[in-house]
Length: 116
Image 1 (tube, one colour):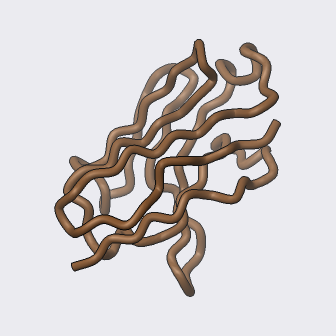
Image 2: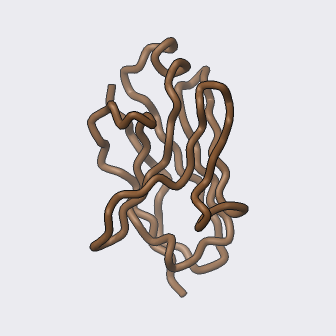
């Protein structure tokens, strides 16, 4: 199973993007039994968790994105999405998805660049 991220791009501050992650090769039971997260890594910084969706359908967000980002899950398609609104230059990073246990090989990620 390997995550495949898509939907990144270059936007101006205040605009929106929607990222998608396909859990390629995952069977439905694996996808549904795990909690999933979106992570990001900015240049020169460590990878951080920004949003998560648990297997009990609870969501959590980093303080820096709370109120602006929304994580969702499509179990039928085995996909995880991240709606990002009111983007800021500080959101510039490569975004990745993985289980909360980080049990999968990291994908290539989706580059998000926000200009001021």
